[in-house]
Image 1: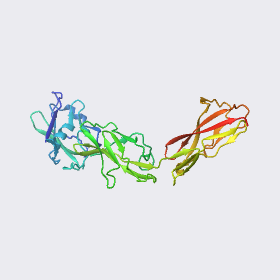
Image 2: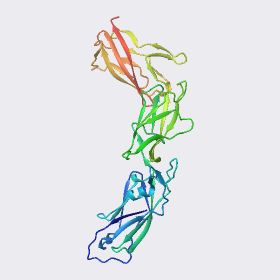
Image 3: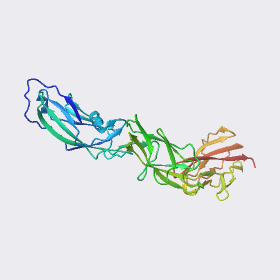
Image 4: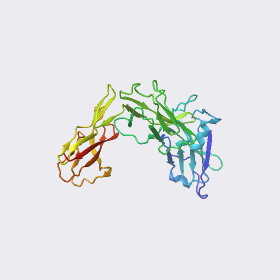
Length: 348
């Protein structure tokens, strides 16, 4: 396992009988990154000096498709004569210790750098090791909090789709997989860079909150090279309305249309948000009068941020008609819901 490169130097300079390459004992690098090891500047005074790499101290393994680890090492580790440095491209290798179905990557890549003068005499030889750790990927659009990024998902939301962000890692010749965990075989599936939840995931009755962790990983030649873990929290369908909801009967009573006297002022009952433990804050979204946007320049309409109740100030400037107030609920899950309360105002 030998790779070589040349450094063209000034012909007037003398070749030292023995040189120091001043290599680090170990180089740590994350998969997908590149690293450069600069050789001593005084080596530029050497004439016709060549450098080669010996990987025989690293166990060679078959990677499949007729490829060997030694082939990858020869591709990933090069000498740059212009920069007088050794270049390491970790994206052409694998994280150390990575396991496929049939092979395991050694715990370190051991490299011997050999310097020779023009007629082949070895004038320098040093060893160093490379330790590549797994790279990182991410899931787009998740919230951060605690140990893991997370997302709340409503039961029955078949549109739920999590997209993987490779974070710049090369994915040509690689593919994404979900790590299999006991009891989670039927929770989600992956296709390309997209993860989709199963409609049967979580509580069979779709009433209890359930959470689980998913770990997608990027695999190259069967070896995991990057991964991430995130949490999915399934919650019951949230009911948000002006009225009553009886969960045991799955019965809804709608009070979203109220007839009130004109100019008298009004305070509504609080809207229902179920399950109540997801209740956070409320805000006014819009007002329409008889289907047309209403300019509430006098600030006659308001929504209580804590309770969601709608208030109308006593005023003689309001005209008879149907006022539709749209209210937004911001839940503790980060999900948002809107509902309407229509106030039919008439002389009375």
